[in-house]
Image (cartoon, rainbow, N blue to C red):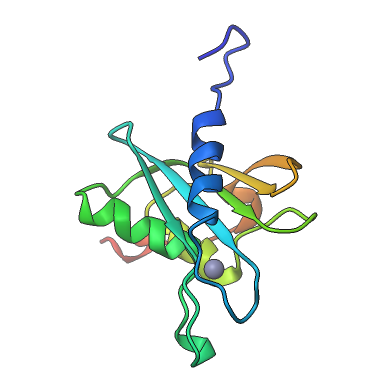
Length: 138
Ligand SMILES: [Zn+2]
């Protein structure tokens, strides 16, 4: 962690960029990569995987969450999402809820474009007043 107290997420962004390069997006040609920093300190990545039957495709965030869970982790410390193009690649509505399952309001979310534009926010900003696991606990 640098002197200003804010953690560096360059490794997380680099991992997301690498994942983006492996995306399977022959229909939209819009590649997305995601990288999760989990509670165990490891980074888990995913990319979007499209399908000829469009709704069956899978978002990069969902792929990264699967990689995290299969490795026994269920807590997201931070997640970076990188998309092709010149606009920030923010998680879709469904993925905001998917992230919520393993994160809390202050969890860091980094969104980037392939050209280097970056924005750091929180899950609380992207999904205010969210419904999560706590709502189902007695
Ligand atoms: Zn999504």
